Picture 1: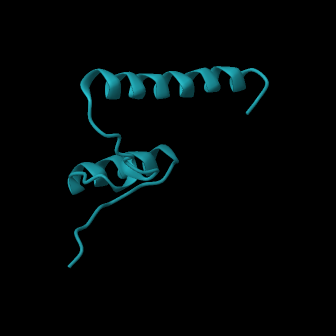
Picture 2: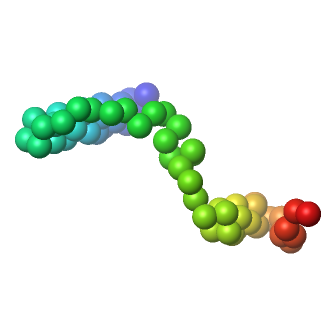
Picture 3: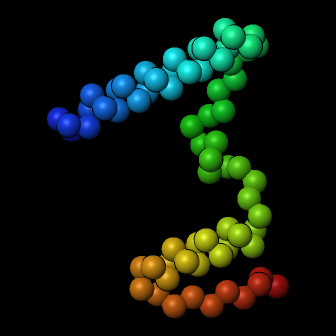
Length: 70
């Protein structure tokens, strides 16, 4: 972590942990870790995913033509 962002990031992580603990204590229940790859393995609409990736590639200066696989 950098000089300036280190303390800010530490406070953000501590805040997230405190919010999780508060919800567990206030509402009861067990904590279930979603995993480090939660956002990458979520099911996403294939057409929306293709459109998002197409925009991303085009922002890099490429031309993209999407054709469905056989």
